Length: 523
Ligand SMILES: Cc1cc2nc3c(=O)[nH]c(=O)nc-3n(C[C@H](O)[C@H](O)[C@H](O)COP(=O)(O)OP(=O)(O)OC[C@H]3O[C@@H](n4cnc5c(N)ncnc54)[C@H](O)[C@@H]3O)c2cc1C
Image (tube, rainbow, N blue to C red; front, side):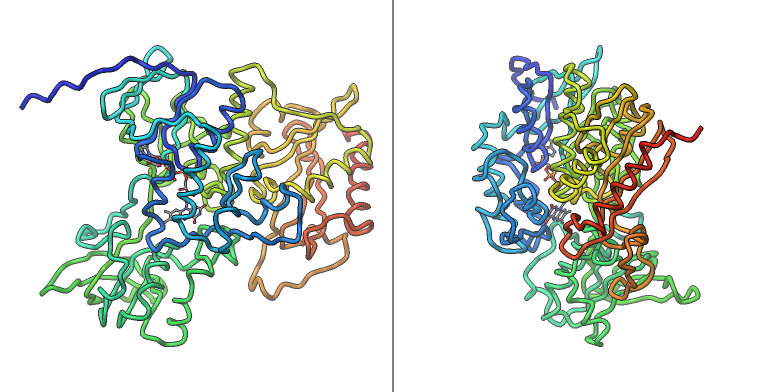
C-alpha cells in the first residue's frame, strides 16, 4: 500500500537542537538561553517530564527533598535538594512544590512544567524526532509529522527511553515493570518472582508485601546497598523494607541466581535457575507471576547509519568523551541520564542532582569550543593563603563538588609568570584529557569518599589530621599536578557537619600542603 504523503513544512535551522525535554533538556535549554544561543528543544510529549508521568511506577521519587537544613545559603542548600534544576530564580526551587522528603513524582512533573514556562524555554511539544542523519557536517532531523530541522550540533537528552532486556529465553512471557499492575489486590496469595535487584525491583516487591504469598527477588549478582556504596542507584533504604521480610522469615527471599529459562506449564511459570553461591546447585522454581525489572537503556533507533553513535556498557549507553560528545559522531552530544556513561555506578550523573551540574558545564564547554568564550575563571592570589582560602571557600559551599564527588572538580592553574586562576566544576577526566592538563603547575580540588572495608557502621576513625587520608566519609582532596604527573595530594579530615574550617584539623594541613607545593619542583 502506498504511504500517505506527509506534508513537509519549512526547514528550521539552528545552532543547537536538543532532543527531549525531561529535566535534562529543560536544564540545558535554560543554560543555552542564558548563553544567548540559537537553539530549540524537540519533545515528543505534550509537556516536559514525560518520563516522570509514568515512572517510577509507584509514584514516589527516591531523590530527596530536604526543605529544612539550618542553612540560608542557597548554594549550600542544593546539597540536600536533589530535585531542583539550577536557575537564578528562588521561585523555581522544588521546595515550593513539595515538603515531602521523598516527594511524589506528580509534583516533579508540575514543577518541570512551570520551570519551562517561567523561563520561556523554547520547547516544541508534541514533536517526536523520528530520524537524525548527518550530511556535510550538519545534522538533519525529521519529526513524526514530517517537519525537518537542521542543526550544527545536536544534544540528545532522551533519557533511558527503552527497556533493557537481558538474554533470558522466555523473558518475553514475563510481565514488565513498565506496565505490570501496581494494584496489590491483583496479587493476593500469589507466588511472585521479580527479576532484577535495582530500585524498581524492590519498589515493586515492597508494594506486594501485604498481599503476595511468596516474593522472590532474583538476579545473578549480590545486592548492592546505596548506604554502603554511596551510589544512589543501588538499593535505597526507602525501598528496602523487603529485606526484613527475607531475613526475618516472612516467606520472601533475595536470590543470587542465574535464570536460564522461563517457561509456562499448566498456567504457571517454571523458572530454571542455578544459584550463584551454592556450588552450582540448580532447580526449577514455580510461580504465578514473573515480573521483569531489569532496567532501562538508551534507544539509538532514531539515528540513521550516517551518525549512529558508538554504544558501550552492554549497549545501554552512547560512548562519550570527557566532554560528553559522542566518540564516533562529531558535534553529537548527550545530556541528562545518558551522561552517566562517564561515571557509571560511581557518582550521580544518572540523576537530577548530578546531571544538572554536568549540563551547566557542558554549555560552558560548548561556549569554549564553538563560540570563543574560554571557560569562566577568576583570579586568586598565588600565595599560600590565597589558594587555601579559595579552596576552603569552595569545599565549604559548593553543591556541585558535593553531589558529583570525585567526578567534577575545581582547577587552580598557577602559571610560572605569576597570578593564579580558579576554574570551577569541570570533569576530572576532562582536565587530564585536554589543555588544562598540559599546565606545569595546577591543582585539582574534589570532595571524595574514602574506601570502606567491611561494615560502614563500624569504622575506626583516627582524629589526627595526619591520618586524614584514611577518612571514609566525604572530605576534600587537593592534588597537585605537573602536566599529567601527580606531585602530591592532601586530604582534609572528614567532619561531622561537613565544615572544613578548623584551624589545626583543616586550615593548617592545607596551608602546609601549599607551602610545600610552592617549593621548587623536584627534577
Ligand atoms: C524507575 C526509575 C525511577 C527513577 N527515579 C528517579 C528519581 O526519583 N530521581 C532522579 O533524580 N532520577 C530518577 N531516575 C533517573 C531518571 O531517569 C532521571 O533522573 C531522569 O528521568 C533523566 O532525565 P533526562 O532528562 O535525562 O531523561 P527523561 O526524563 O527520560 O526525559 C527524556 C525526554 O525525552 C523525550 N523523548 C524521548 N525520545 C524522544 C524523541 N525521539 N523525540 C522527542 N522527544 C523524545 C521523552 O518524552 C522525555 O520527555 C529514575 C529512573 C528510573 C528508571
